[in-house]
Length: 361
Image 1 (cartoon, rainbow, N blue to C red):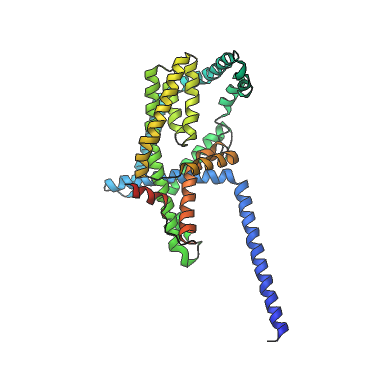
Image 2 (spheres, rainbow, N blue to C red):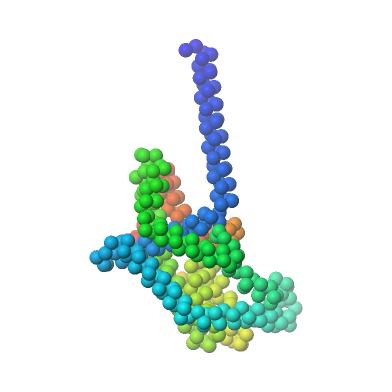
């Protein structure tokens, strides 16, 4: 081969590399664009996966203790879940509906009273400009559910999200390995074993996190409702339910849950409002320094700063749904970074979040 042929071959190789790099860059940009424009749908799919992991883990635990196949155990879990939610909702629906209506009226009223009190102090007048009016608060409370995010919008859209998460989650939980094997087949053959390890670790991490979070939510909701009832704060039941549900969002959720309770207590007396603040602070301190360390020993440990950063980032990008799903997404990201980058690329033998929790035992 003469010099001219060698140069031609070298030029073709160079052009091939340039085309390959440009093509990969274009594919990367297109994938990012698709993720951005389909973010709501992707969040909805992730919520379906979370629910499927919860159902699968519960059915696996039940099948382990009873001599029945896992599919039958899954059916039992779904029936029990529907019975608890349906039966509990039917029994408590009148009280919840009444308390929700009263809260929608009391919270704006308490803000109005607080604004009137602050007007006496000149140095606090600047705060008044940033506080919503009573009418704005009523509108916000009415729009909170329809603008919750995910895929569909509106009141019926929120119901549609719930139905999709329920049915798709059940389908995923019924045949999880069908979908896992489908993902693994997209990976080169020599990497499939590692891909399966990573997916198994993600499933284990999410199941541990969900189990710990469910326990924490139940305890926080019950403690809040009981504590507010003892203090004599109105609407203790609905406030306890709100506190339990918002505990799904670590760090930011408890702050959001405490605001309506304190505002409602303020309509009775400032002293009761201070006692309510003390109750919420006590519950959160007990959860942070007693309950959470115990749960993390059995489940998953995540860095608090990383979790809060992800909540702020995803909340700014995708709203309330992004904030709610930020922590499990952080857990998935921690597994991917630790296994695929730190372990495989850098060669460092670091532990995943679930392995860190096992070490704490």
